[in-house]
Amino acid sequence: MRGKKTLWLFAIAALVGCGDILGLDGYTDQDGSLDAFVGDAPSGDAPSGDAKSDAAPSEGGSDAAACAPNLLCVTAPPSGWAWAVYDPDTRPACATGYATPTDVEEGLDAGAATCGCGCTTTQPTCTGGNLTIGSGNNACNASTQTESANTGNCAALNTSFSTSGASKVSITGPAPTGGSCTATPTTTLPAVGYAHQGRTCDYAGDAGACGAGSVCVPDPKPFGLCVSQSGTNACPAGFPTQHVVGTSVTDTRGCSSCGCTFDAGACTGTTTLYANTGCSMSATPEPTDGTCNGAGNHTWKGYAYAPTTNGSCAGSAVSADGGVVFADTKTVCCQ
Image 1 (cartoon, rainbow, N blue to C red):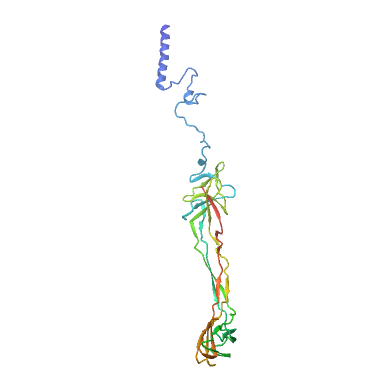
Image 2 (image 1 turned 60 degrees about the vertical axis):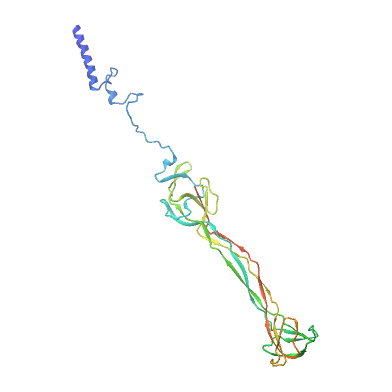
């Protein structure tokens, strides 16, 4: 009997040794099976090794992670503003996702007009009145007579008169008639210049959301990312750099009105006295300016009047006015 019991214990020991060889060392008498190696791990026990989870990646993370490749997550513009891109100094092609390239200028530089006011003078007429002749003494006022100023080349005096060493003659021209001024204003406008000449492009798609208050937009390079609105406006938050641009200008530069003041002056010139009515003897020219002058020892019977006019015009003071503005002003605000 003792011999049989010893044999039985030996057989059990042999079976345990075989388990080590076959890799069944996880087997226990507790459940009497191999489920622990081919089935699910018991609840609360983590299997050894690098187990991988089948759960989907987290939907959270940064806002930028929610945008597709080549898109940027940026602060959405406030109401009334539209996406735009802007390059102030060059005019490249619009980046992918942007369209409607518009060449614009920024920073108007337009000097004021240079103004002038000249006048063209039309001289008055000096042949429509009478000459006044004084004579008879050294003061030229012993006797006075009038003669027509419209003499042509020669005319007989209505009344002859004599001069000698003791008497002189003075001749005064007629009052001028007519005459006028024509204003000749001048305006010179300096060329309009610009601090910048660049290009804008508009966003051609719909910006998808990438977080609270943010949207996905295409990368605008080589342009800067901006927003725009018609008129001149303060920039919204997130887009602090203001550019006031336009594509055409309204130029109202000019000058105030040019006017002229006319001065008819006086009819002067020369009156030549003759000792005969045919104007061929003892020709003696006398200034026709009212001065008293010697004329020699003669009895004067003829004369000829050659008038001189000295009417003049003075231009009024003028000043520059007006200015240059964009006809289609737009505010572009960039990050």
